[in-house]
Image (cartoon, rainbow, N blue to C red):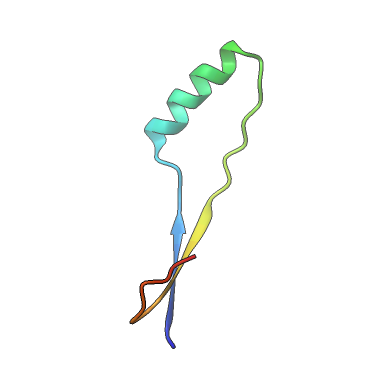
Length: 46
């Protein structure tokens, strides 16, 4: 079974909007990039 791994990143527009909202509430937000693992020839992904 062959697998494909893709890197996922937050879009810049969403980061800007969240930072504006967070700055008003004195909160801290950390953006963590993730991964999408696809299993070829199946309908499964993690």
